[in-house]
Image (cartoon, rainbow, N blue to C red):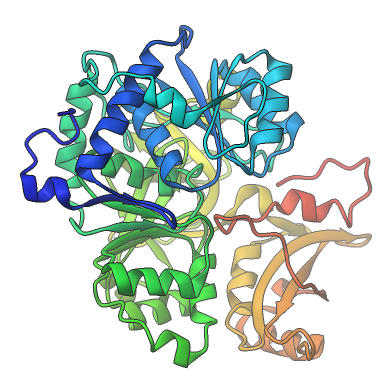
Length: 515
């Protein structure tokens, strides 16, 4: 019996551990798979850094791959499965990965990139027989199902940021997300302690596993929390899964909420979601109206985790707290303390807006792998770092994010924060989504432009109506000077937008664009 299921009762061993749209595995089924995978990885030359790339969509095999890497003392590299060959080559080369896992939808790109980098071990599940690709099923079958060694040092994942501000930056999962331990056995013991604080019923992965939020649920699986994974987000299918499987936990982003709320009332009424105990959300700012409606629907089970891949969760807020302080992302969690600094670097008191920094009591701060310049740029003192956002704290230490420093629009010398304008536009009943950017203005330097996804594509709301609405809620200088209507504004799976890319449409090519 493996480390993961050690001590489980016969009844629990028969219970659901992992499922996707094709397979259902009990803990007894999962146990030998994890041992076989860990033993198989331990037989390979993973190099000094022991990196293993996972380039595949959501499925049970992807979950097993991530979990098996942790148990083998290997550092998995979660890779966005939408990347091109060139983009993947950069990550494989930069990470030093020696092994790559691929799925049927990523086989061709993964194999080509691995070949160009010189990775000789490519393992694929449910792939047609392909030269250069080792079949997952046969690979596992040939490995030992005996309990794998547990004395190796557990290694964190190596994440790559989205690259919206340039070349993707690599950063290891920080201690706030990955409890430090000397051995794999010690890590699993700590993860069991963490998982015991979470709902014990099934959780569902609604977003891509290459993102840090959903990936926390894989680590919770090692601690005993059963998991179901969806191959792609579908709002009604998610509701049906919650209803049928009595789902108790998930990690989502505001875009998921908006798509759920867009379902017709009669569709939403078909499904009982009362089993949900914890609906964590992260990744992007959640419009106040959207969050309020989700709480009214699911109950006070929403928990917002604010932070970053580099740092982990720095702030957290429950539904009850948020209803008392709408718009806040919560108070700092250990080991962090919020520090608001002015442009001259002086510390600001409550209710004064400035750049948001965090003081890490451990002294670590954030670390970008092999990039001391970027690491230093993020810090103003040892352990005091920024994630690049602007905001303030209230008298009780609750943090409110105003905008990103790099997204700020400077018009006629006045700072305008796009997030503030976006929040207003999203309150209009005829606006499904909106993003605000700065575009050239000969007199003012920049002016505010709104890119809007109308609620009804055939009958978009008139710009004059939106302008009047904005002026009811904002000072005139903050209101958009122009509006454009689009079918889509390019949010990624975690609800984030590459504003730098959007700005390129409007700025001269010789201008350096922030963002």
